Amino acid sequence: MSLNDANSLAAAGRLLQAEDLYWQEIEAGNSEARLYLAYAFHDSGLHSLAMDHYLELEGTNYWSSAAPQLADLYLEIHHYKESRAVLAGLSPEIVAGSLEAIESVEQKTASYISEVPEIVENLLLNESQLLEHLRNNPDLKDQIQLVEIRGFLAHYATVLQSSLGSSVAMQSSELNVGGLSVSRDVRAALGSASRRWFEAAHATVNAFTLLNQLNPGDTSNFRELALSAMGQLEKKFLISGRELTEEGEDFVVHNLIWALNSIQAPAKDFYSHLLPD
Image (cartoon, rainbow, N blue to C red; front, side, top):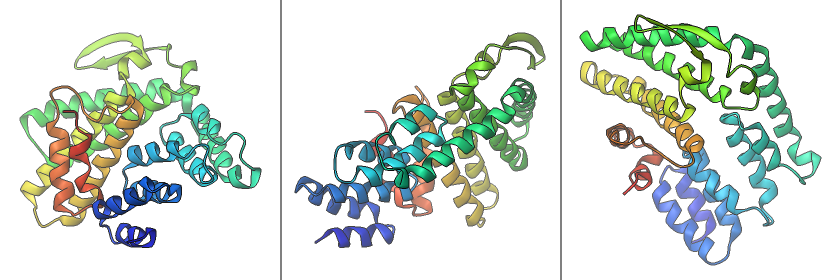
């Protein structure tokens, strides 16, 4: 078996079998196999595993191929400093596109950063109202709306933890949540980005579970929600420093594993290994 065989298996969605072949090549000293394994994980949405292997390629002949991909992963979670750092020392021709992307995201974020306190206030209020309604009347439309709101909250929490967020993180905002009006800084009101991405995934897992109960034939939306939940957990995993779940809430990951198996996603075999013992 060869590297080409591994690539063919990965392209066919047989990621677990491909990984076995990649590792045979890696253990034989083939760094190119590690690059392609990272690509396979990246393409399958397993960004945390892809990042691990890109990092392992620093100092090898394949770093110039790995670094721009790694920079993109850091940029997804608004880690601008880390994104630029991995590009240091590479030729301008290789990194030009990545540097332009970093600059573009920074500029876009800077254009709305001053509006974040007011945006967050409204989102937190909407989240509180939806949660109260869902406790009494589980409704798919409301659950999907909660998914959207929690996705935005996770995004803004991530932005506030970036270098750009420091300028607004300590501004006070009068927040009306659950009928209580409190003045607190924006970052404290949101909590950690890690927790927010997990809560977004939790809402999405609940959404595809409810969808499966109400309309099991809607496989297209089920698949979309399952992959969205995986993407949200991947961001939580990267931001938290490799913590996939929250204490006492492993059921969120277990339900996601069930959904990934249901849609036969290439990543389906990997999440059980990422859970803590």
